[in-house]
Image (cartoon, rainbow, N blue to C red):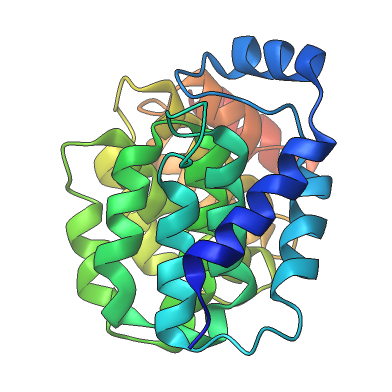
Length: 245
């Protein structure tokens, strides 16, 4: 059994050593973050995590414990949660997704609810929940529940879980379409953007299915959604959708 706390501290030390105070201030302002920041880029954070867990022989419980330890506040100042530690926690889960399944939905949902920023929510939804939900149908009922949640970050996650499969020409467009239709008139920017984002990427391979879905809904869709959704449609399809609005 790996000592998750010790490994988390080792990752923390490496992140601190790579931090930039100037970058930390800039990113905290950009994300409107209430967390502390070390000022480490996403690629650097990913590299730190990859190096730390390579050869660590983590099992399921190790992965969960390490993610929990990183998500929590560090044991030395600053004693508030740190953005890069939480980013590292998401990367531990993503890089160890083969150990996870629907039984871990409770942990993932808690992190999504506590994240409160697209910078943490989106990787969890797109790069973790997306692949897990494709291979484990235990996520079906979970995504159905998330799509009707009061928390817009959870609703966004239900949408974005479809992104990678649909982008790659697979996925459950019928379910995504149901979710998106129910949220189409949502006033929340992050919901409108997510619908458009998934439609845009679906349109890379299947523009016809996107156009057919959009045409009868064009009057209900926001400008934010439509601007994204029509990007990979043909000129004729794009004109038809925009004219229907």
